[in-house]
Image (cartoon, rainbow, N blue to C red; front, top):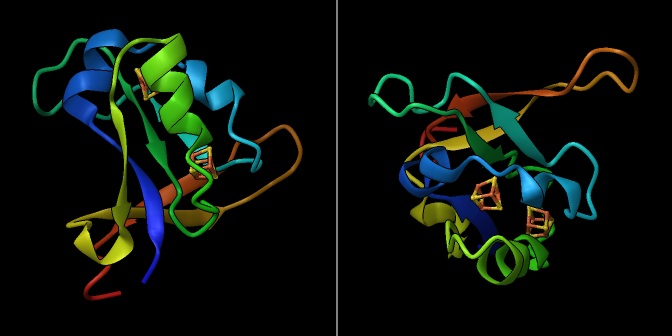
Length: 107
Ligand code: SF4
Ligand code: SF4
């Protein structure tokens, strides 16, 4: 087991600054969805992490805590995630990466 970044949709969707997406050193790892959180009534979308690409460096945590001042990202053990986003489709061209939500215990 290992640590991955986990973003609180509740906090992120209230801020939606997208700052962390510019600082993750791994390409196509912190993604952003306009739809995430809409079911729960949040006005904005949220950033989320494709955990299969996260290297656990915690740089995004530093950015969200110290630059954005939003404290929305925590490092947690991957087996503690109830739902995880994993890379579904990567196209290094005009199309953006997408990720699919899975239950890590089942996956
Ligand atoms: S820096 Fe924090 S609040 Fe801003 S998009 Fe990333 S997780 Fe959300
Ligand atoms: S822990 Fe590192 S690799 Fe993982 S999402 Fe954050 S910045 Fe990217």
